[in-house]
Image (cartoon, rainbow, N blue to C red; front, side):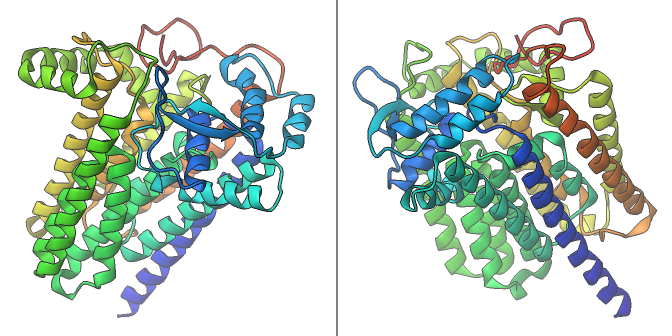
Length: 484
C-alpha cells in the first residue's frame, strides 16, 4: 500500500511537471516565435476567426476556393508577416513589429480563401476562437488578440495533458514525443496540431483506463473518450479509425447505452465527411475530377494505388524528410537543425522507445494493444490516401504533401500500445528512459532558441530552404533538405 501511494504521488508529480514544462516552454517559445510562423497558420487563424462568428461550413463563391469574410484589419496583420513566411532570409524588423502592434479590428470584411483547412470541423479551434472573440469584443489590438488565442490554446493543451496523465499513467516515450522541437513549436503556435496531440493522449488514457477497470470504470472516462475521438475524427479526418476504440470500450463496459452513443458518433463523423467533401473547393490544383471521383478511380484500379504507396515509402529522400520534419523542421518548413542534431534527437528517441517497451500483462492486454496498432496503421493509410486524392493529379507516381508532423498523433498511439501497464518508474529500463527524456528536454531547450533567433532575428548566413511539398533529393551541405 505504501509503495502504491508513493507511485501515485510520483505519477501526479510527473503529470504536473510535464504540463508545467509544456506551458512554460510554450510561453517562452511563443514570445520568441513571430506570429503566424507555423505551417498554414494564416488559414488556421482565419478558421478560428470564422468560428468566432458562428461559421461552420465555409463559403465557396463562383470560381473561388472555400473561405469566408475576414476583418480587413486581420488581413492587414497577415500581410506584415507574409514577407517573413515566404522569404526565409527576411528577419522580423522592429518597424514591422511595431506596425503589427498598431493594427486594430476595423469591422469591415473582405473574402479570403482558407486553403488547407476546409475539410476540418472547427471544434479544434475553440480556444483560438475564444481568444480572438475576446480581443475583438474588448477592443484589444489584433496582435494582442492573436497572442491571447495562442495563450488559450496552450493552456487548453496543458490542462488536457494534465487530466489525461492522471486518468492513466504516462510512459517515457509519450513524454519524449511531447518535448520534441516539432511538438513544442506547434503547441506554441495558434495551429491545431498541439490540441490534436493532447486529445490523442486523452483518448488513449481514457480507453486504456476503461480496459483496466472494465465494468467498474467511471462513466466519465467513456464520455471523455467519445468527445475526444469525435473532435479528432472530424477535425483530423485521418484519425477517424480511433472510433474503433469506442467500440472496444463498449465491449469492456458491457452497457448498451454506450453502444448507442458510439453509433451516433460514427453517424456524425460520416455526415461531416460527406459535407466536407461536397462543400470544399480548392482552386490551387486543377485535378480534372472531384475528390470522390478520383478516390473511386484508385479503388477501381488498386494496382495504381499500390504503386503510388510503394514508390512513396521506398523513396529514401522522402523517408529522410519525414524523419527530419517529425523531429522538427520549424517555421513554414524552412528552419532546420544541423544533421548531427537530428541524428542525436533520433538516437535519443529510439533509445527511449526501446526502453519503454513492456510485455507486462500482454496475455490479457494483447487485444486492446493490437486495436491501437490497427488504428495507427489505418490512420497512416488514410493520411496518405487523402493527400493522394486531394493534392495529387491522377494517376500519381508518388504521394506528395505528407509531412513528418502528421505522424506525431500515430506515434503517441504507438507509445501507449508498446508500453502496456508497466509503471512509469518500474524497473531499470524505465528509469534509464526517464533520464534520456531529461536529456532530450535539455537538447530541445538548448537548440531551439538559437535556431529560432538565427531564423527570425539575427543577420548572418542564410538558412537553406525546405519546401512544404516534402519531396526531392537532398542537397550537399551541413543541413538536410526537407523538400524541393
